[in-house]
Image (cartoon, rainbow, N blue to C red):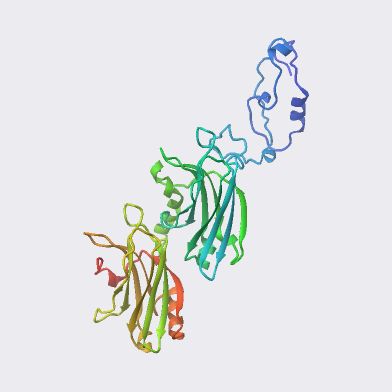
Length: 395
């Protein structure tokens, strides 16, 4: 190397080794001294001239980092994107018998400092994608002033079916709680539920990743950050032909009593209901009808559960009817949000009968074929308002 004409620059053996042995892909850096210290002017006499930029950098494979995307901002403080955010350890278990997903959030290590004291106040949020963000959000408690928090908390999703395991993704995000401003995002992990096997606990110890950006036709403000991960899925659901927006789940019990000669309908609980109020919750209740209802006497209604998206009712209704006649009927179940002084809001509904499809029809057929056997099934509520219910929005 030469700086000015006639002056030979002193290059250390470390620089020679770096130049000669670094294999693999390279990326530009400003000068080699960024990685190896150069003797000062007092050691070498006159300060060496500035070196020209070299197309050399430590190979990405050695650091574990990936090449940045075109146009992406490179943070010079984070030479290793896969470990600079920290690691999260957790367990997942899908219980097919109870239709539940158990998420055990254990601990995190080496989280990125977020506060002025060089620490963070981390907590973990869970979301199921696609789905409404408020309805299926679960959250751990906050651990104060630590980069290595231990939670050991169990969070449970109810109403998870085999179909959910096939196509849904669990988003686990770690955030820093800030009482004076908005909470800050640290990193996230997305786990496709199809990686789980029923009744087999799976252990994860994974590096956190940066937030996955989603393409959107409109710019999003900080206030919409909490729902950004659902925007793409919701837009696809609205634009797709014949697709209905999912509004939650309901657990129903059906049993035809041969002794009482009638249908027993159990409204057990709902899960992940859509939020209808400005506080991010709903005041849900359930109505049932047995259609066609000529005399308009088949309506039953549960009590109202205040400020919840996962209400538990455990109420049972009875319809006196012959089994042969029941085969021609349709059970209509709708969930509503109770409002004072105005019409109640429709949350979602499902119909069970000979004209139903999928799980709703199978549940109805099993009830007719197995008298005196209580059969519980989870059903998906959709945004389709049954025609018979449109005339009674506030009933």
